[in-house]
Every structure is written in C-alpha cells, then in structure tokens.
Image 1 (cartoon, rainbow, N blue to C red):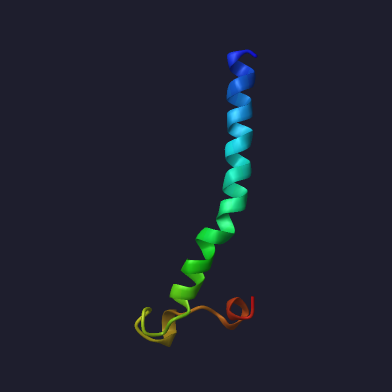
Image 2: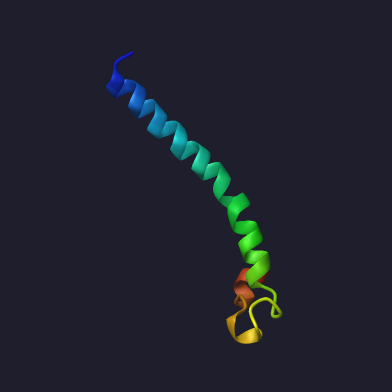
Length: 53
C-alpha cells in the first residue's frame, strides 16, 4: 500500500469516527444550554424547537 493510499484511508476513517462521535458531543451541550440556571436566565436558553428534539 502506498503512502498516498494509507493517508487517504486514515482520512476516511477519521471522518467516519467524527460522524459517529458528533451526537455524543452535542447531547451534553444541548442539555447544558437548556438550563435557565446555567445560562443565567431564559434569554439565552434553547429555542422551543430544540427542546422537542
């Protein structure tokens, strides 16, 4: 396998990992930003459309 193919495989595999990892990174962020206490009032909390997801 040439270096070019190995690098291409590495890039593809890293993108697959990131695609599966994104929901797990977003869930705590959505939970944290939904809290009025953490966001110092309701002005900065999530919109209603995000709460229903």
